[in-house]
Amino acid sequence: MAKLILSMETTMLKEIPLSKERTTIGRKPHNDIQIDNLAISGEHAVVITILNDSFLEDLGSTNGTFVNGQSVKKHFLKNGDTIELGKYRLKYVSEIPQQTSSADFERTMILRPGANQHQPASGPVPAAPPETPAAAPMPAATEPGSQATPAHMATSPGMAPQPAATPQAAAPALPLGAIQILSGGNAGKEMELTKTLTTLGKPGVQVAVIARRPHGYFITHVEGANFPVVNGKALDTQAHQLADHDVIELAGVKMEFFLKN
Amino acid sequence: MDMSAVLEVVTRSEPGMVRTNNEDAVMANPVSGFAVLADGMGGYNAGEVASGMATALLGEELEKSFLQREPSNKETSGKFWAEVVLETEMARVNGSIYQAAQSQPQYSGMGTTLVVGVFHDNKVTVGHIGDSRLYRLRGEDFQQITRDHSLLQEQIDSGLITIEQARHSQNKNLVTRAVGIDPEVAAEIHNHEVFPGDVYLFCSDGLNDMVEDDEIAMTLGALSANLELCATQLIQMANDNGGRDNVSVILVKVKEEFPAARGWWSRLLALFK
Image (cartoon, rainbow over the protein chains, first blue to last red):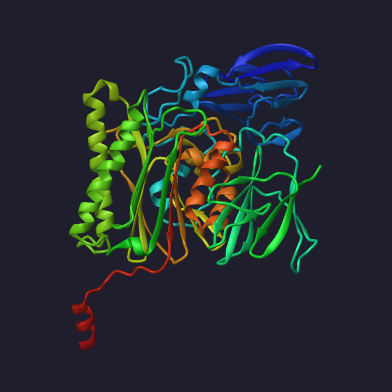
């Protein structure tokens, strides 16, 4: 479960687990996190927690809410974020799921009313109204009318592209590869292989692709009757790993692959 | 109409780098012109059972239905036969999986996402439930055609989080609709126009959770001349980025137009009008 760590200057004051859907922060005593200081508004901010995600929302406080030095109205909290309220600091710590559950964690699961399949029993999973298992609980600030009605909104094919995860494992430092043209009109030209895929050749005649992978560069035949030739040897349909100073022949053009430092 | 002359289809499904079993299932019938992708869920091997049932049942029933009648036939309801068939057959598959899950304890709680595309008369009729997706590359333009039935999509729609924030969300794996979980489920069904040169990508979240949309678009663009290699490359990118889930893709390239045959009598009739 995620938690907030309250501190003032260098003194740690308290740890607050985010066990509720709404955790309020303010000067008045009814707040979940009460900070009795005049710089803090009566109802200053709220942290909304939905399963494993938490959001911070400023409740129109006089002096504002800051996260990592930036003034925020609404903020999606990430592990290590520091919320600043006057002289006080609240650090958001979201515990990494344990190794045993991490496989489970990636598993697709259905979100159903009343069913708490994802979290340990202590976590208050917001229950959706029974007729609309699709409806996720929204924070008070969001108008109820703005809830999703996917069936009606999806008629247009022109919707925004969906998010994809940031690739988990950053590629280990692979020296940058490049191609230098050795023959033909473009002889001497150099091209850095920065993209995941670089296509070479003439579409419809002969095309090959060089894929940049974490452990090296690989060339593969894409189309055309002739296959690319590497160091005098024609490739088959399989990908071929390129070594420094390999010479590639493709659509009548010679080029050299090399690694930059 | 034999669609295999106008469509080039490649299907691929792999377990990824972390899991030992593959709970995804894919099938395509290039002759009838449809493709089905399912991402199963549920303990032990039940996810595989659910996705396997979905692709097998739909593969059989859709083929039968489209032999009876062309998918582009207009029904009295004003809908295409393809839409009617998808509605009834996806509902029926839901019933079968639900029944199996209820009656056999080892299958309890199993379910699957589903995305189905039927190509007919220069159109594609798409039905989906859950977060498996259909994308389309048309020229430079790369679009997601289906909208996920997921908690994250609802949070994006309601303005709670932005698309950028959604990338970092911990709630990626929660779907709000699935096949086989409840006695009834509504499939979302839409028709889209198809142009020659279009490339369609059906995929499970094992691809789009691991590979950015930009990278997927670039791969389709660069390798559309060789769909087999394109599929291999997509799966390789998901695996290179961690491959935490099963990865499945179906690629469909439209080689030329495929208007429905109108029959000689209708052409003859048109002459006299």
